[in-house]
Image (cartoon, rainbow, N blue to C red; front, side, top):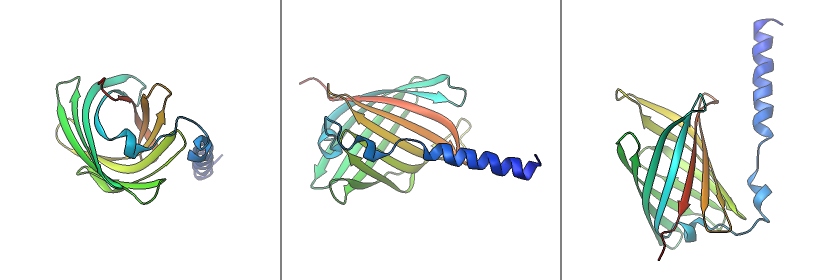
Amino acid sequence: MPMPRLAAALALVALLAGCAGQRLEDYAAETPRLDLREYLDGPLQASGIFFGRSGRADLRFTVDMVGSWDGNTGTLEEDFVYSDGRTERRVWTLTFADDEAFTGTAHDVEGQAVGRQSGSAATMTYRLRLTREGGDEITVSMEDWFYLLEDGTLINRARMSKFGITVGELIVTFRKPAP
């Protein structure tokens, strides 16, 4: 097969594989019902792992968070501590248009994050600027999926990609601190 035809065939396979994934509607009837406005209200703690391109667990982290809401607009302050000693702070502003659709902004997000929630799940896509070792920046596309479990744990699975190629994955668990 000539190279241009091979490249076109591979691109078509990649496109079709991407279309075969999950849809938020798949979770519409699932319980417990996730409402990020309720879940992200007050103090939260999270733990996570970043898996690099090779699939190796490259970096662990913890996050202390506080969310506060004024109607359908919320602020989520996140303070990260990474296993390599680095710290980072991100402050999200989330705005719900209705009970399903929302947008988000943060200092290291290009433009707006766009999200939806339904049933026991939520999803959000955005472009995130990351600082690499040496100080140079890279922008990656993020696809976050959130799943609420019966015990109140919220699981986040996030895929990072560049030019459509997966460059990393995050798994994060959120929980509300004990009273």
